[in-house]
Each structure stands twice: as structure tokens, then as C-alpha cells.
Length: 177
Image 1 (tube, rainbow, N blue to C red):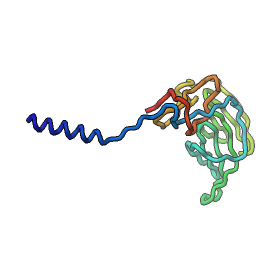
Image 2 (image 1 turned 45 degrees about the vertical axis):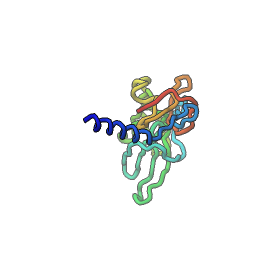
Image 3 (image 1 turned 120 degrees about the vertical axis):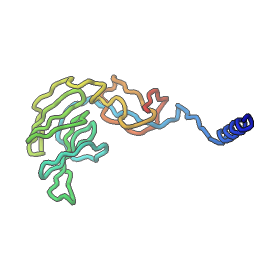
Image 4 (image 1 turned 90 degrees about the vertical axis):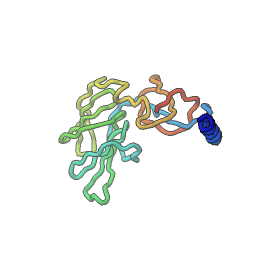
């Protein structure tokens, strides 16, 4: 029994010595870095590329595609085989929206906004309920969603977090698992 136990311990020791581990230098890590902004102005703009797609809403013949933390892409879907992007509705900090008739109800960071679409060419802000949502838990994006690893900690003095990008980090203090 003792020989078997010793043999198992010896094999475990030998096998574990073959596993390589590398220490990560905290001065040379890659991870997520916040993109800050403080302009909460909502506007209809020229199309931009989709980076972080959210939900899709269809209203014949248009597709509205949420861009996480940035706004809504508007596509003409007259030809479903070749939808054409026509505008981008910039709503800083937007995570979700609802379309009812020609009105959009959406979040803009902590605020709840109602907007009126004018033929997908322009937009009018009808109402804004400030601080409707909890800053940390809902719409401020203070840590990278669906990500595990090091990231640069949120600094409220730099404004709202519009999104996250993968980059070199200088001595990261924050981690997600």
C-alpha cells in the first residue's frame, strides 16, 4: 500500500514538473480599456460600421439594429437580399430601445428618452427622464460585459463609458472572471 502511494506521489510530482507556467508581467498586459464620452446629444447621422450589435427590430421596410452604447443603425430592407444602411441614430449609452409607431423609447446611460422619428431623416427628442436607471447596474457600462480578464478600471471623472476596446494596459487593477 505504501509503495503504491509513493509511486502515485512520484508520478504526480514528475507530471506536474512538465507543466509550464508563465507569470504575466502586470506592466505588459492586454485587456479591455474604456472609451469615454460626455456628450449626451442625440442626433441622426451618416451611417457608421457596426461594432457591437444588439437587438434587431423590423418595421417594414426598415431594420433598426442596436449598436451597444452608441445608438441605432437604420437599414432600408426593401431588398432583403441586400439591405442598405441609410442612417445612424446616435444615442450615447444606449443599450435597449422599443419602437412604437414613429416613436422610439430608449435609454441614454441613466436617462430614459422618448424620440420622434421624422421619416428616418431626422429625430426630435420629446422627453428625457434624467437618472431613471441606476448608474452601476444598468447603463453606464462600468465594466466590460461578457469578458474575462484584466481591464482598466472605470474613472468617473473622465465621463461616461461609451464602450470598450482591446488594448495594452498599464498596470491594470480591475479583473473579471
